[in-house]
Amino acid sequence: MFSRLGILFMRFIALLPLPLVRAMGWVLGWVLYVLVVPRRRVVNVNLALCFPQWTTSQRAALVPKLFIRIAQSWLDRGWLWHASPGVVRQRIQVVGALDEFAGDDPIVMFAPHFVGMDAGWTALTQQVPRRFTGIYTDQSNKILDAWILEGRNRFSAGRPFGRADGVREIVSALRRGEPMYLLPDMNFGVEDSVFVPFYGVQAATMPSLSRFARLGRAKVVPVVTRMTPGGYEVRVLPAWADFPTDDAVADTALMNRRLQEYIDAMPEQYYWVHKRFKSRPEGEPGVY
Image 1 (tube, rainbow, N blue to C red):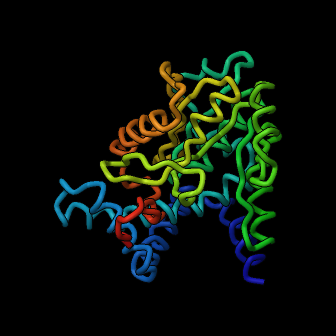
Image 2: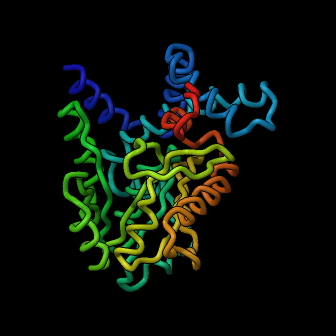
């Protein structure tokens, strides 16, 4: 019942002017900041580990901004998935090295977990004439799961794979020239992960960017999405010339170093509510 009402609400706010939607997100963000104390603690721990050079007041000032950005980006999914295609195109600008998508070369896109990650996928599948793929994690709520999949499949150029589809089918799509939108910068547990530094702290990280690029004989193209007052800017960066190598661990460490550069440009838009350091190297205590 509540899920269906929530979806109806998102369809409704798709009709509203963007400044009003963002104002609603501002209010919701402050509510989340006040009420969701466990996630606020996670953010504080993450920022203390990653930015020890900041003062306590500097870190504290960023936390409510983050919750506001997360709330705004969630409400933005209303117009991303339900507004007219013309409105979506008007509000999302795709800029940068678009020539990387010319032809049908295999491409793995490195798309970090910034709050605009869904806007980036929507813009590419709408505005770039290629057929894109990604990896989708099923949601436990089946009503929301169907709604999210419908939204992400809105433009026919997008096709998310489920994790159960297996590596072989994903690699086959890569080699056929279907660029892959990959978000490998989360902690998915120790299994199949490697420990590499992230802001100087050992973090369990999936080496999937290196492995998919190597298996698919693909170049890696970073795609970084920034929330702006008018919507989003999706910036396509030049392909990494030195990636992948035969060393997946070294590649993954390099990925994290370059990710840090992207985060430093807009730290309030990164997904710090995630327990990035939940998995610890053997013998090291937990941080949360």
